[in-house]
Length: 119
Image 1: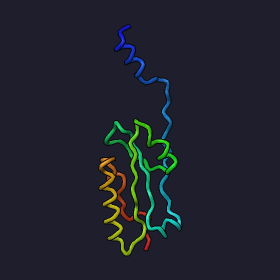
Image 2: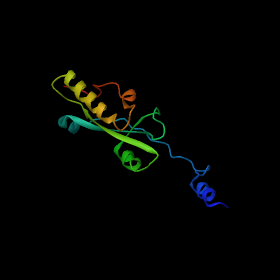
Image 3: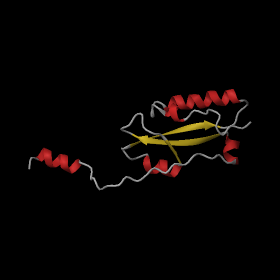
Image 4: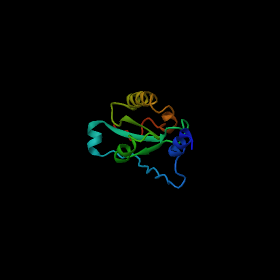
């Protein structure tokens, strides 16, 4: 067999391999987070699908997926307290804008800029 063909066949994914489903988990700030004023939110999507579904996950899943080449991960430093809602919205929008450098469509998933906000 030609070495290029055998190399290709060796790289071809096994059709019997079942992909582990992504376990979603929405962030839930606690009192310590509110005292700190922010939380870290974790997101994932398939790397080869730039318009793919974005999932929010917990830190443990983020850590296990962040090294996998088939997935794209990113974090958001999410402001949850502040002097007013406008300030929080601006800071969270800035965080989304920064994350878009890694995950271009994160703004389609994260829309509520004052999610978890309290004065």
